[in-house]
Amino acid sequence: MNELEDIIVKNGLYFLKAKLPLEGNNDNKYWIYAIDAHPNANAQKIYAEQLYEYLNEKKLVIKEQDW
Image (cartoon, rainbow, N blue to C red):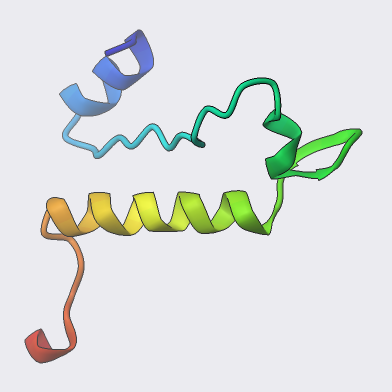
């Protein structure tokens, strides 16, 4: 854990460090444009999947049958 994560967890909050797969020097595969490193749709999909998995593990996902 790093300092920020320690503070967050110690205060009872959840922390997820979402990551893109490492694929050598082709990081711009997940960029909007070659000169704009903001995450593109492919990166957003990966982040969303990681977030859903994390929330599900923490039992924070409300499933339809629980309504």
